[in-house]
Image: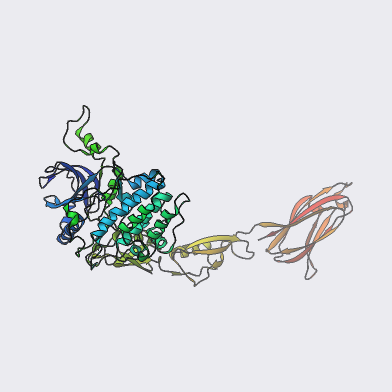
Length: 606
């Protein structure tokens, strides 16, 4: 990863001392600095070397600095200077103490009177920019600073554009923050002062309700909600006149809103409560310098600036809550035990808002024809990863599929190739794996289970085995398969095998008695079957041959012929096997006359 050099200790053009880093953006580093000539604290952004090597980009960067210098208002963070030092091009801007509105809202929902007053000051400051032909394009709580004297300053005009510019051809992009973005920005249409009015309406809604009118998990979802949905009603504590101002500011069509910030400020001023609870937020305009009356400020065709800088937004989180005197940057002797680095960190706690061009984009917006981006490496990523990386680099993936050895859904090819420079919003054709090519299922019925498993594995298929009784079949023989050959299935699919299990004795029925007879039909599936019997003689039997105990005969039901029999003379606990093969048979038991208890179990072998 490329890293810009740490410039702490340098003095740009032997004038601007860089004391401590405040934040890093895509284009450069923001430093807390000191203007030696005017002996004042400043914020300085130095462009990263690889951007400084792009002459066309530096020229556009300078034109944007000139455009932003026209916006001179006490309610707007000011840009002081632009230069080219050995370390690279740089901006110099106002260093502002205080906290951001975003930080304040993270702690609490504002009182109605204070929210109205901040909304009026925000609209008034935007109106001042609108009067000079500049649209902010990224109004949000993080860019609204509440200063120690209870005033506000609007920062981060990094994505600002000239409202009267006749062409977007040189624009890097149309940008903004999705949660506060107007419907026309979401559609990629040109921005007007009414665009800032909508975003200011979202900010005012959030101050009054404690949350923005719309939330969603993705930027696209947010854009659709801004385009299609009506904001929920404000809490009952908000007066009707103030609610009406918010509703008008949030009209879907620009023509339905206030024409510019000044008109919105006037409407908010008109609905101010007169019950003594209104909070002043330094609404008096501060004196301005002669640049404010520059009659050429409203004209021109300068290019739009790139997107809002991440570093400038990040510095909002480092805002100081110390009194204004804490911003003094004159050298002083550290207290005992306090290092110079510690002193610098304390000074760096103030907010540095540097107005500059930057790189963050809303993914779903249209890009200007002149802006370029580098095609990222997308191969090897799943669809979600492709979408995320394409979003960050501002290209649009177009998907197709083909068979490949990679897992299903993984990107295996792309065009253009990684590293190619293309226009923002360009299409990158991405081929996703449809998984390995399908295979033909081999015929394995009649093979041994072991042979079938080897054949299926060789074809790239998996298998399952279910053993079943199979009278008359060779043990371990494949009887059935599903799917059957020659079906075409994805590689890695599973084939279910039904396999003949090894034969064993299986009980069919059991019965018992004393003296009396019994006749039991049985169906035999195996090639043999058996009767296990037990006899317990209870009468008088002096000689074995004179005992008249139980006996049994088995007959074929079709022919009626006997297939074998047995009696007590064979022993009192024996097993008699019949090798008749499959068929229907009847076992007939004669209980005898000597009061012998008997029990029998018939088993089949398969």
